[in-house]
Length: 565
Image (cartoon, rainbow, N blue to C red; front, side, top):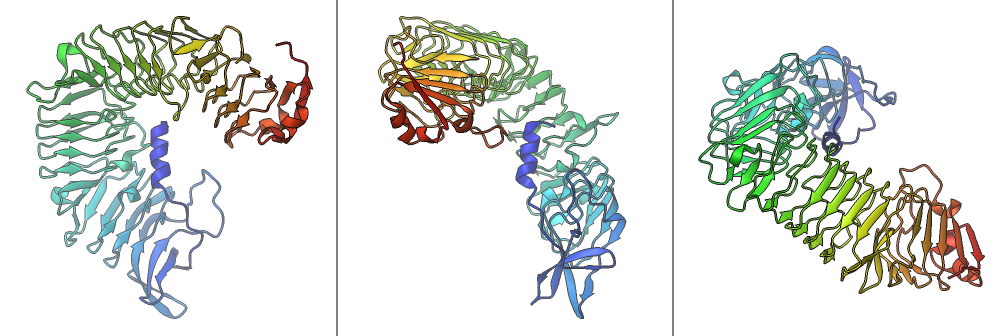
């Protein structure tokens, strides 16, 4: 499944508890208060559950009692605990008593055959994550005596009564005409649900003003959702990873998060209705433009960039499967993450009328060639980082600033990068094909190489004094690096995750000062630390200095030789 949905699950699913206290009539309980004599329903934990295997302890219809006896004491059942019925693939329904006041995280999560639930009258603490991944759930009701929640008009949903917020929904939900808000994760029951033969359609009534973040995220049951006039705001990832094919934004909408339709691979049509005072979709562009600023804030696979657009906004095309992009002469800025993760994009030509490319603008995309034409003045940190297939880059003489490298260097993780071209007349930077060097500070701010990298190559007129933070980070195919005799310092994480590095030739007589984690390999990698397998070659006569220098002394294989400078 998509990465963002996995991230959502990781945040919402708590760690499993370790034990149940007792079992009565086939139901497991934990004591929650000995003083009040209360307990909660939990799951069976006699044996560890192998990953991927359902619990299979509860099945069919489970009737939870109001009270239970244990060791001669009577306990009132007041809660359905965290994970209580999770992963029971034969569970059809749970009938709960009126003594229940709370239902915990993931209480019914991932029960693929669960069809029916009724929330008791005294429940006041209800986590909507309790209803994650319930593809068969079709009857969802609240006892009419409940003061906090309701299921008005037989809507097959849970509504927060006092705020008119749709809180939990299922595949058969019909949104009532007086609902004002669709809550974050409201349709969580449909995450990972199989795509139905006949995809569902949903009408958002005119009473709804806000669709909160991730409300429909991961719900692949809908191909069409109709928005009514009255809607004002759509939150981030509201429809992330859905199968929507077209979106028509009402004239009443005044706030759309640019990530609202992230990873909607089937989305081909985006329109804004006439009369909207904030947004438009001028010239049939299949995109959303912020009218006042001429900023394209949200695009899709079939979008074109109108000739009067000045800015491509943050995340505007993030993770689209757009194959080609043509930037108009009006364009002045490409904001952060604008084309992040575009897996079908192969070549990018940024014209000189664009003055600024912000951080991570094209990161994690599949581009193979980048040409930044003369006129561009600033490129943000990590703008092309983790473009695994990037091979050739041309940078302009006009380039004045490459962003601070606290997120990532410009080409971090571009493991197949072979060459970067930069004209010799650039006043701020030098490039020898292997490294970018900031002239004033004599700092290498970026480096790369499939096999060898010569930091001290003579084509760079000013020999490096420092290798900057994360300069070579995640260049996984780099096997050998040669460092110049002028080098004094290597900053934090400069060679982080350069897992193929086998040979370091350092020509400096005095060991350069090392920052933190300079040669660290990620803990997720099973290879030996670089310090145990990489050979360090140093100038003749400086062997002992390196063997005793902080950081360098961790290397097991340090040798010396006579360098021909």
